[in-house]
Every structure is written in C-alpha cells, then in structure tokens.
Image (cartoon, rainbow, N blue to C red; front, side, top):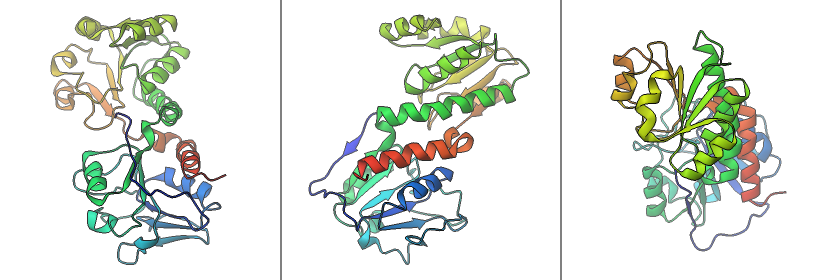
Length: 304
C-alpha cells in the first residue's frame, strides 16, 4: 500500500480533553490502550465486550450510546475497513459497521487512523471530510512491524515442514520492507535464500547481503528448486503455472495483505500446502506489535 495521508484544514493540536475512540481490532489494541490510557482524557471502545479493560477513563460503548460529538481521534483495526464496512474485532460477537452517517457525527477535525487505507475507508473519509492517516505507510512503523511478521513466518515454516530451516531452499518474493527482514532472518538461521527483485539496485543489495537475487524472468526456472516460498507482494505472482512446478512437499507462506499474491485455488488443486498468514504480528507478538502502534500514536498526537 502506497504512503497515504489525507489532511483537512483546521486540525488542532492535542489538549488535555482529547478523546480517542477505538473501533474493533485485536490484542494489539489492548497494548495501545495500556500506553494511551494514562495520557488521554477519555478512551471509548466499540467492539470490546469480551475484552478485560480496567482503566477509569476507558469505557466500553456501542453505536447507540456513543458520544461521537466528543471524538477527536479514531483508531480502526489495522487491516482497515473492507467493502462491506465491517470493522473486525476479536473481542465482540456483534457486527460493527462503519458508515458515513456515524463518522459525520464526530468533531469536524477528527482524524481517523488505520493500518492501511482501503478503498471503502478512503471514500468514507472523503465523503465526511475527515483526516485520514495510514500508520503502516510510514517506513519506521512498517519496518518495526516487519520484525514480528518475519518471526511469525519463521515459526510457521518450522511448524509446517519436516526439514530444518538450516540449508532449506527458501524463495522470498519481494524485497520491500517486509521482504528484506524475512530474507535476513531466514538467512541468519542458515537457509539458502533467493530473493525476487525488480530493480538492479535491489539486486545489488541482495548480493551485498550474500544472498541470491533473481528477476521475474527467472522465476519459472527457480520455482522447482524451492522448498519454502514466502510471498510479500499483494499482487498475483504465484500463478497456477508456477505452482504446478513446485515440489509436492513445498510450503507457500503468503504474507501479503488482501488479495495476496498466490493463486490459492491452484495451490489447493495441486496439493501444495499454503498458508495465507494475515495479521501475524497480532498472533505471534501482540504486545510488541501493539507497542509499535501505541508509540506511533503518542508521537502523532504529540503526547509526551
């Protein structure tokens, strides 16, 4: 997802009466609450019925009781809001739907934070004239977050193969912020890592890291050699043609956000074990991942 920040006029600086509304999410949000509760006047929670939260200034609410006119800032689930408008939450059995009729009730200079900006959310912000910030568009946030992502990928590779990662043939698709960390970590534990790159400068960096670099034109010939393939690109790269040439014992781990980069139907057809590992930081290191988000919000809200 490209960097995205939509700033409307009239945004004011934080004061002691600042009110944050957290809508949905996962265990990362609990760490955000822990960090921000001592700093803010009020935090309202929607979609946290089953969460244990014990701060005097943090209150669970619902859309019917929400004092939206007080809200200065909204934090959404890290994956954003999909086309059905639903904000996912692991702490609620209720369907949480975000609409422009609700957002328009917040303060006119309210800022909405999300991990990524989906088309639905971008349109919602435009229709309600609200500030919109993609936290993971920031390089520092994405790089920090790539660490639990890579560790989670390593955990899955160990759990779902019958070989050691040491000496395993591992192909990493993409050399962005996540791809770099994944390649470095798997190499550090002894894997023979090949990285798919697009640019000559990335090829040079991969070689400097003492790894092998290939371009897409070489992908078809390299695929049969690989035991573990890790995709980090949210564009279809692992096509049916490539997947059918994988070893029957190969493992695909797709780390890319929706729609992913794997033809999952083809992988199933060819009996290739495939894991679409969305939201790994929340599953393997929610405290660390939540701290990354919480500290970033403290900075953006100008809280010491």
